[in-house]
Image (tube, rainbow, N blue to C red; front, side, top):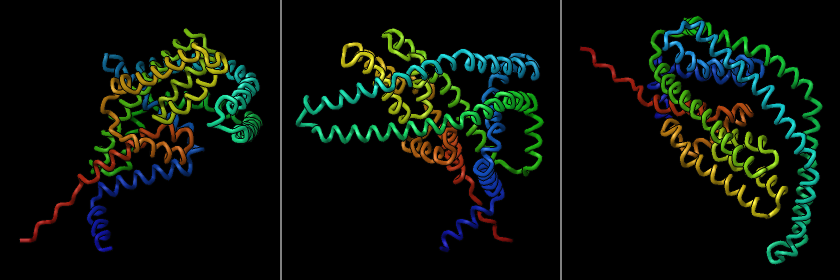
Length: 356
């Protein structure tokens, strides 16, 4: 107990550590208690932070700040418009077709499962196959109820999306345009001696910027390569599955494992255990291997210095706290925690000199 008391006095006698602790505690408290209400503001701030890099690049070429912001903002709006009116309708159509085919897929899976005891009687019995089938039916039933409840609340979801589509672009523009004013306003409430917080922020800013940039290009490359492979072999729902594979890289290790199931199931339903199924599966596994062993080291290197266990723990913790967005930002948040832990021991209070 005495050791803990001495550590507490020695650590929190430094005003910079106290300030950093207050910033972290207040930040997490605001997100936990008012995250839903402030979601458009927080999301707009994150988007503006990501677009700031492009603004700085254009500014470095001699263009005024306001004009640079306008160019980047227009490009952002064009990208959002392309996604909303180009990609989403195609994905919606393929999702509808896939849902319509689900009964046929389920029946084919049932027939294949009930045929296993005849082929491999020493591995699985008819009773075990029936138990697996009953469990699958229960899961599908609960999943159907969840989809129904989601559809009943879809009106609220549509209204929320409409609010986001109107409000968030305005917030993003003003965050970019008035960045210096907003930062000056925030720093006016902070102490002048905040070297530790600045050091942590510089480390987090460097790593997160490189991580987001690399992750964006990883999503695009994996999505394009997967789409080309699936389209070449004529796999159904190629765009939908390619988008899922591209987005799966956001969640390391877990995402690739989860998205493998729909890819294999759609390929098996389309071709059975034929050569086309084998070739598509091999192509998909090759893309995953190239992504993990070539693309990730090339894009990231040692930028995100986190152990795989730390990444998985961060996904579980932040995903449990903030759902989808917690999973999406798990690695940047883990990077923040890692930067704080690395900077914390460096701040040591030297013993005061004895009075002469």
